[in-house]
Amino acid sequence: MKVELARHYGFCFGVKRAIKIAEGSKNASTIGPLIHNNEEIDRLKKDYNVDTLHALDEVDFDKKAIIRTHGIPKNDLKFLKEKDVAVIDATCPFVTKPQQICEEMNKEDYDIVIFGDKNHPEVKGVASYAGKRVFVALSVDEIKNINFSNKIAVVSQTTRKLDEFLQITNYLIARYKEVRVFNTICNATFDNQDAAKELAKKSDIMVVIGGKNSSNTKQLYNICKEFCNDSFLIENEKEIDFSWFKNKKLCGVTAGASTPDWIIQKVIGKINKI
Image (cartoon, rainbow, N blue to C red):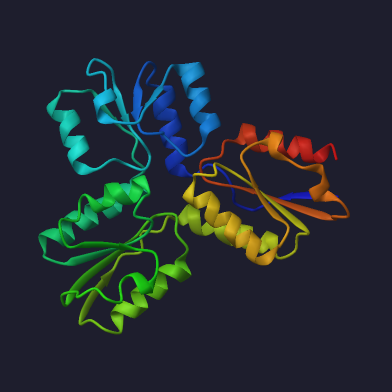
């Protein structure tokens, strides 16, 4: 059986940047998980004593606080600064962009639609910059009964699928006089998704590596499953089932944007032993 890696996979720019920041900030705490990969979070704790906090009331005001790649709500950041906490901002620049857009569009009295998962930390952070007239949706059905004004601005969670984003924007453009569309889907997301699709089309089995709480990894898995029925999402090599590979000739491998190379290599190493 041949094993082939997707043309684009794994760590994106924002995650690489955040990991580097954390490694250079020993004895610090991150506000929420720095990235969506539990094993990498454990490595940062073990090797650099970087703790993960899950609420603001856990903050030690004498320690440095690292803002996660997904960002945090505007008021949470304001609270940390008012308490004179040493804030180190590891928010991905591609996430900072929709925050800035929402803040500006709110000042100009636009209704704001965010295409994304309302429970995702990135979306919660972006929405906090959008004022009161903000609507978060994953499908056209979720916005059909909303009475919008004639000025609408639309942004996207950075890790969503473009075709689904277009469904919402096309719906709004056809019905309202002024719709400003900001394509805030990250380029790395495009590249990883296109490469996964290309590889899945010709593979007998696809292995997608990444955190099961990672939005971009789940998107990769859904894309692979669409074109290769035998697609599997795993977090590490321990989850590999040898029976998956019976009578398979080509195994495609891809990985989410929060998946470090050392985990990817362990998975490939175990597959190669089959």
